[in-house]
Length: 375
Image 1 (tube, rainbow, N blue to C red):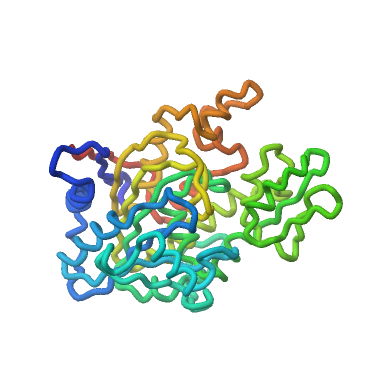
Image 2: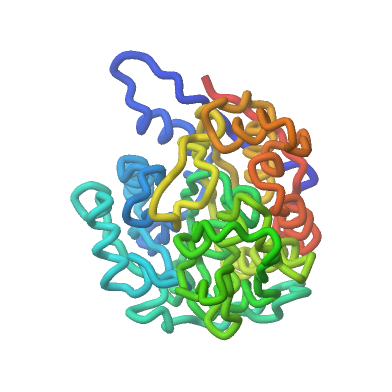
């Protein structure tokens, strides 16, 4: 990996007669996607179709723009994602496909097929070695992702309640893991409740995707046998009553995400695209999306997923927070501890730098980048 990676950037400004989809295509061509030999090859485009009720996910139009370029280069593209660990509208392939259809992803709108990467029940995976893996020596990856000759990630860059932001590494590493893979990434700790701080508001139970939280004692109780360790309840609690007794849990999660990304991207051509738009405070896995915490920034592309995430994070740090948002409310609260870091100020329970540091350490990419702006 080069000491400095190229990251190509453009904003969302355009002129009459030039749709943003055309601008995105111009960007990825400028970023030299055409250097990849796609002739007759299967090309996986990994993205997130959005949970039902969430409206912040990327529009299908962007997926079609990328798929059309792949087809122009002779490739055979398909959109893909793996099933979720938690119950919801994407917990098996049939529900997942229904969700994708309802959110607008089909052969007509995107120009290619939608394939759920880890099969009907989330068990169709491949055991892949992790080069330089420290936490995971092997990764459980959705078979369709690994069967592809070429891998492209198309990411909605937004906030996240555990990893700070959901960027390219999160889209690939966590999203590409089968249900067993997601379990392996989340198994570093289970949350607990500080009953003295619990207000019995039941917000945590509303966010729990595993029905692991009850209130029989008058306070929230998290059943460790049911809990899958996803951490959504921690981000949901406004009173800091829920915590992970493993203080390094989110850091370890981030490192595992980097290692899973390494397993997926190793030994084949890859290309990565990230759109910083509708920057909701939490993941698109939520069945809702709160107001954006930052204004739309732009579109980016690179062959280096670490450099791409680093560039996106840096651009967001320079943006002015939106007052009527979760981040804006936190910054306006006189009791809030200001971190001078948008991701930590959005949710103080997160860890984000460790993911990129570990990705660089294991040879996935570099945090050093040259930002090349396309007008």
